Length: 75
Image (tube, rainbow, N blue to C red; front, side, top):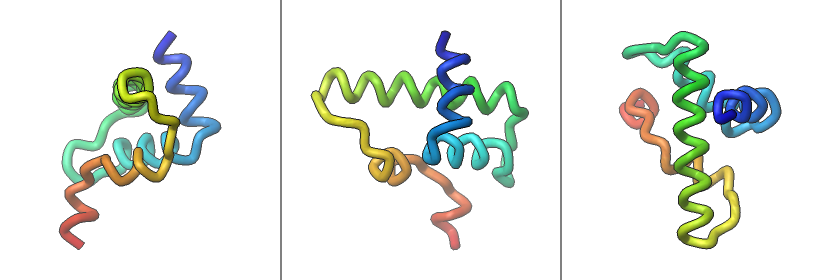
């Protein structure tokens, strides 16, 4: 179920689509398509957990700020 939710979010949500593209095209250890979708599913779990435990609404900007991307930090 999480895999299908991840596929749907990658297709329709700009933030998750960007995360998926990052995982597939990163310089060190790029993931294959299926691996990337599974990684996005793990991110979905973390987002849902934070929303439920902290009582906050979904914020795409916060999601993108919290992701560590070494190649972007070095530039």
